[in-house]
Every structure is written in structure tokens, then in C-alpha cells.
Image (cartoon, rainbow over all chains, first blue to last red; front, side, top):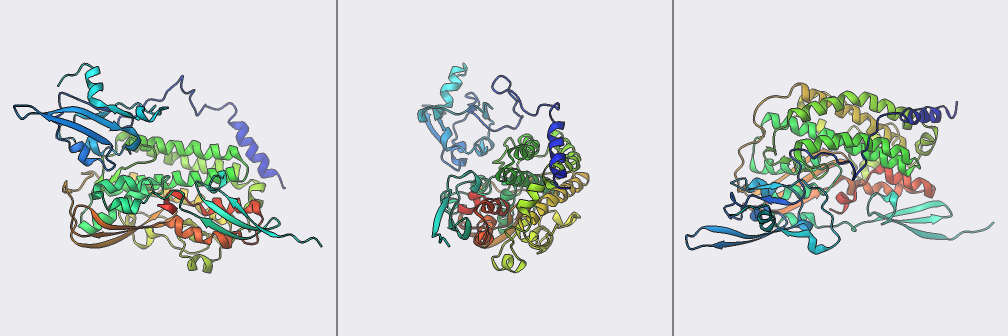
Length: 134
Length: 365
């Protein structure tokens, strides 16, 4: 009988009427991010960083713009760590390249911004704001 | 009798049914299609050229952006081509995890196919069902690699990190759910008379035409050609698994839908076997930090969701590839569009676009 399949399909839809909700009320409710989640800002551990620039060399898209200074003891210091989110592919190659594991993601997925300038931030400034000193 | 003039109608590049930025110049006689000419290039990013200035490891994330709904398969194709070039032996556990991820991604990609197809046929509700189930797979990818679509998980020499217990448990739960999921699809889509009437006997690609165009993937299998690289080449761990290749009868829109539906079941079978026989051990081979493959070239092909995806890499012995060429299945399959649309009504062209399943990231590259 023509229409039998249509009714069977409608029955499926009705069956879900009282079913479990599949979505959450964002932004009131947020899903937790996984342990390996790649996204947000780069968190630089200023104490661990040896300013070797391997992260910038590992980046395929030149999203990292670093300034390094050398003091009289020939010790290298990371002066600025500019991360251009607009260029970033979130491929994780910078974090994997770090020999001292000084980099991680802050896992904040709400990365959209109204202005292009807001898509560049300095991880050193953010580290200092957290109260970390090299 | 009133005579109508032929005219050209531009569909796309901003049209919800052309799946991305595909423009199709449709020549119409009344409402009948005389010819359909795909115009591409709106999403060209020059990935092949970009790869020439990146190291081999840096090239892998770019492959995510080719066929962005089945990134794992793209990663796999590129990494296997480099491994062939540099003669790298991949650990067995990594091979198994690669198969699980590639097959999960195949299912997720077929979900997009089913979802967009039902949406194009006028059933927006149908799309939600397919995308609900796709979400389960994307959540699993989020667990294993931290990204939902641009995975960058399969690396040269293995995989980025070992699969956690949580991922393997989640994959098993999903496989257990597949029969119920397919049963629901049968009740809501396959049995629907309107769905059948729109698809059966429309936009037929004959076996000969499919072979002539060099088509591959579910599109050629729907035309009755038993062609699957997983069976022919048995690359990676695929030789160890027992699975069938679903083949269609006449190559109409309906067959292209049914073949993909059956492929979901077969992919689930492969994943189940891989989960049951997963060996222990390392997941990454010893690959030098600065990889310099010897001078020469290599071609490797894998069965991507949309067909035969091949990477041809030429090495000049340096850290960067001298030339990369990508054989993209969507690009080749799109040639059949003209023949599929001829003689059909304009409303049926939308079904043809959906069942040929082009992905513009891959077409334009």
C-alpha cells in the first residue's frame, strides 16, 4: 500500500517525541572538552621555556612570531610569543616539538572575535598575567 | 505549438544543494536539462604547491583540508605514500588503530551523504537523524586526537598517540549501536515512498560510462563494478579482515544510496574485527626528526570515502617534497555529472548533485 512507508517514518519521529534530549542549551550549558582537545590559546609555562624556537620552526603555517633576547650569561629569554589564531591550524605540531613540554592548550573553544587584532595575542603577557615570572 | 528558447541557469556557487562552492551551469529547455557544466576553483588553496615548501611532517595537516569530512582517510593516504618513499615499517597496533579510525570516518562521511541527500530531497528532519549519529563518531575523534574534523591523527610512521580505553570502549558501543541505527534509517528513509520515487531510475550511470570516466568509490560500485582498493591492494591491515563489497545493479540514484548504506554495515564489521584482534605494542615507528627520504618517487592509493585517493610524491632527497600530486576522487567523479543530468528535470539535478557526493575541498584542492 502506497503511504505505508511514510507512516512508518512518522512513527519513528513520534517515537522520539518523549525520548532523551540529544543537545544541550548552549551557552547556559557547556560540554566538557576532552583531555587531548586542541584549541584556544597556547599556554606558555614561562619557567620551563628555554626559548629554543623549535615550536615556531615546527609550525607549518608560520602562526608563531617569537622574540628572543640573550642576556650577558648567554641565557635565552622569551620576550614575546605572538600567536596568530587566524593562521593556526591547531595541528599540535608546536606542542609536540617542545623539548621541555612548556606548551599546552587552554581548551577554550570560544575563539571567535569581532576584530582581526583580537586574533593575535601574546602568550608571554598571558603568562605574566597569571603571575608567572621567568 | 509554443516554442521555448534554451537558456543557461547558474546553480551555485552559493546554493545550499551544491554542497560547498560548486557552480553548475545548467542548460535548460523548459524544465528539462540539456547539459550541466560544473565550474570549479572557488575553493582552490594550492595545497599541492604549499606542500613543496613544507617538511613531510608539516604536510600532513594540509591533507585534513582536502576531503574535510573524512580527514583520517586523507592522513592515511599521504602518510602511507611517505612511508613507501622512505621505507618506514609501521607497528602492527598502529595499523589496527588506523583502520578503526579510517572506517569510523567512512561511516561519519556516509552520514553526511545521507543527511545532505535527505535535506536536498526536502526532508530537513532526515538530516538531523544522520548528523545525530555522526556526532557520536566525532566525539570519539575528539577523545582520541582532540579534534573533531581536522584530525591530524595518523602520522608518518604510525599514529600520534595510543588509543585510550575510553576510545576503544566508545567505538565498541558505537558498533553495537549500528544495527539499530541502520534499522531506523530503513524505517525513516529507505521505506519512504517519496524518497524511492525521487531516486529509483533517475540519473543512471551505466557500467561502461562509469569505467570510461575513471570513476571510483561507491559511485562506480553502484554501477555494478566490483572495485575497491581495500580488497585489490590490501594496504595496511586490510588484508587481515573479512568484509564484502556492496555492489549496485543499474547505477541509479537509489543504488548509490543503498551501496553507501550497506558500506556502513561493512565498515562496522571491519571495526569489530579490528577491536577484537587488536595487538599490543608501540604505535609509532622510529622516524627521524628530520625526515629525508631518498631521491625517487612513490605513488600510494587508498580507498577514501569517495573513491580512489592517490598521492604521488617526488623526493629530491631534501626535507621537503619536490612535487606532490593528489589524485582526488571527487574531481574525477564530477565528470559524470553532465551525463547524469541530461534529460532529467531541474528538480532531479539536485538529487544527482547529492548522490555523486562531491566535496569541494577535494575537487579544488
